[in-house]
Length: 275
Image 1: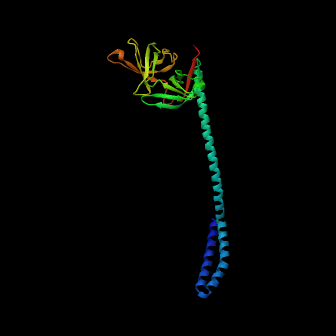
Image 2: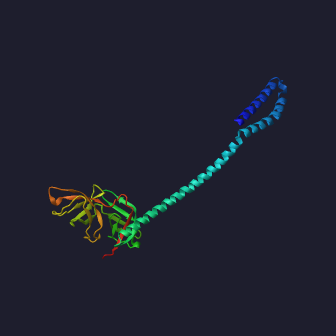
């Protein structure tokens, strides 16, 4: 409040001086104008500059401009620190993802202790109505061979159909070209499950024995027949049984245990320790 009053008084003084000089100038002959102008400039300008400086000083304008420079420097420093923090956060997220992947590998290893396995993760997918294969990041250099079984935490994924030195292609059980001889865990009846063209999230179970009692909720697992898949690996659950006019044509819908849309980490079975 005090600074504002001082600033106002100084402004009034400057205005009065300028008015006096204007009155004097208007009452002076034209021939004397140049001399008077020079005189006015020599007298008034230093006073005006001094008063302006004093006014700015009192009003804190100098501090304001100095503050702007300081704020700019601080802003640049904060931007730099923010960039460094973002980089650190990205590195942390990478490490976190790697740790989660390692944990999944450990959990899988513990769950499937009966098998000698190689951990892998999916690096590419080929998912259409006519094909459902994935590429994993292990190959012949890791001991991977054609027809080896691939599993996940929830159950069966598929089997290896081709191998390079550092990658392998896996045909999943939801691929329409894949047929897996399976067993209904409750009745021990043998059935065949296969991928469908209509829906790449379910399997169709066929060749159901006519005397088999198939119920919704029954578990389906590998039978060990066929020479590819070991016995007893979980495949999925029967979601529905579709009866037809001919009992030999009835079939069941099997919901896979593995969610193939979110599948990232797998194990390739090199050897069954029970064998």
